[in-house]
Length: 126
Image 1 (spheres, rainbow, N blue to C red):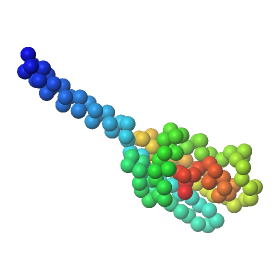
Image 2: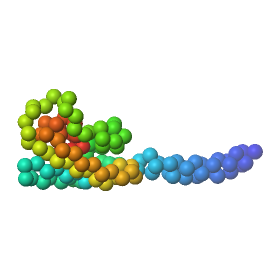
Image 3: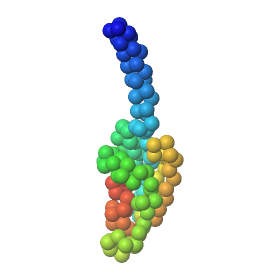
Image 4: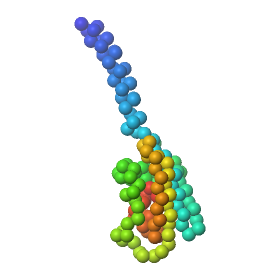
């Protein structure tokens, strides 16, 4: 009887391990985004990867956390006039493209000034 139980455990354990490994990539799918800003004749560009968090970005952990918080819905960082920022015209154009957990992303938005970018798009946009 013990041999039968031991044999069943020997067969079941690798099957469970394989199932766990196959499920893990779906949960931890990598994201890759290119973030570009145009402001006053200057262009800046960053590359962000999530899972693992990294890339050429000053704070990839915070940026990836924010992306997860909004479920990758970049419409949530669009310009809103109700944000408490000075009404100074110093436009910043932001473009974000790539993918978030396998979902293609292509985002472009004009903000009246850097304050709006900081209030709405940070830390995704540095």
